[in-house]
Length: 182
Image (cartoon, rainbow, N blue to C red; front, side, top):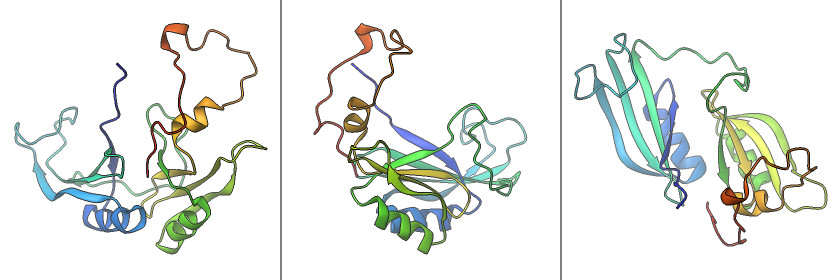
């Protein structure tokens, strides 16, 4: 059985403002109200080093149940955004929301203080998939996609350059209704 995505953690400079923004813009629901995280062994999130003293956390839920965990580091503080998309660093470089009207949602993101990175466009000619890239007010890169991943990936063009990239035991047929999300 394939594992499911549980949540994505995003660092922001103001967890309260970020909760309001993500709930208003994307319709996410607050599952865990913002709360303090302290440097005690019981509270310190795994993976943080001894510099961590204080932070804040809140957990939001998307329409398909995937969580967005927002972190604000207070001591040491969250560093300011340099407005560069960190695609050249290891690890996540964007999160993606599925929404049937990418053009409207892109405009809402910008109207609510986000930044346009790539205007809405078709992913591939002669296919219905529309995408755009925006940034939240704190610089997190967000992709907006009109169709669920299973629909987009099932129709992804292949040039045959990497015929063994997905071994047969890891391939499976996708159905258009599967993975429908908001």
